[in-house]
Structure formats: C-alpha cells, structure tokens
Length: 165
Image (tube, rainbow, N blue to C red; front, top):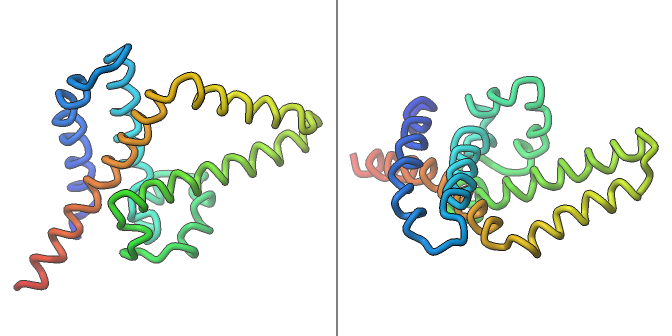
C-alpha cells in the first residue's frame, strides 16, 4: 500500500484533473458545483479515506476528535469490501459520520435544553437542502465518492502488482 503522503498527492492532483470534467457538466452555477465537488473530494480523500479503519495517519488527522471514528475502526475491517469498496466505502463512511453528528446533535439539544424543537429545525434544514438543491447534493456525493476511489484504486493496484511479483 502506498504511504499516506502518496495518497495525499494523488488526492490533490486528481482534484485538479477532475476540474475540467466537473466544469463541463451542465449546472445552474458551475463554479458552485465545482467548489462543492472539489471540497467533498478533498474531504473524503484527506480526512475520510478507507484507511480510517486501520487507525492510520488519516485517523490521527482528526486530532482530539479522532475518538468519533473509534467505533468505526471496530465495526469495519480494514481492506474489507466495506472499507475499500469504490462506492460503498465512501458512502458508508459518510453515513457513519452523519449518524455520529445526529447523535451529537440529539445529545446537544437535550443538554442545552432546546428540546426536540432544535432537532426538528436541524432535520428541516437538511431536508430543505436536499429538496431545494438536489444538484449540489449530488455534486457532494460524487466528489466524496471520487475522493475515496482515488485512495482505493492505488491500494488495489499495489496489491495486484505484489501478487504478480
């Protein structure tokens, strides 16, 4: 497997290489679509790659918040189809993180005394975002998926070459 710094370079270079493709797609606001896609690609590739399950460099990048990923490291085995799947891997990490944020939001609204009204507003915000801006949600999901894929593909290639040699 390539070291983290190689994966980081691949993520950064691929974000630039994907720019013409993203800008060529029809959109109301191409610059915003590109920005969302690129941010999601970098987020997935640098902070949420498949190696989180191994408690590798990317896991430690979360600093004091790395404990958020501790259950994930126990639930998902490193190099399994769940961690290294081209589509399922990144989307599973996104779902996991969403559930963690939801749990923290629920705990926060309870502890701060907002009750369920604050949580209802939180859900309404995300529901409205998905309903009113589906294109930008798809841009984010596509960027997040490609960010994970450019980490997984070099791992697959490295493993394949090692098996041949």
